[in-house]
Length: 84
Image (cartoon, rainbow, N blue to C red; front, side, top):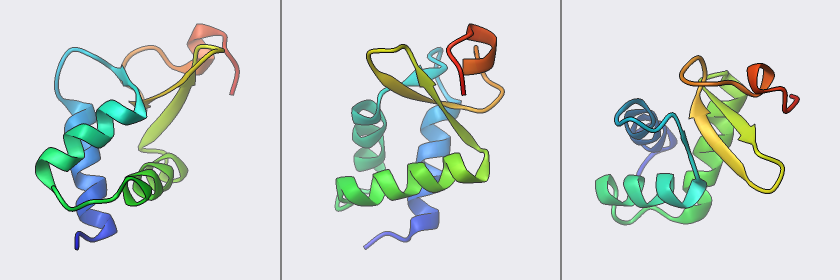
């Protein structure tokens, strides 16, 4: 079983690579499962929430869906005028 820190590291690694700056939870979960195959969805959600609380990740809402992104990478919710 993976630790919370290992899951957080996998999330940050996924979030920092590639051209996309915002991503859906399901995409992030798939990427983490490639690194840590036995991880449960609830554990990934806990780690993502912890990263948001720590200020590493941020939520980005389009109004109809919520995405995650690394804080400071891409357009933030404040710059886009969508609140938070």
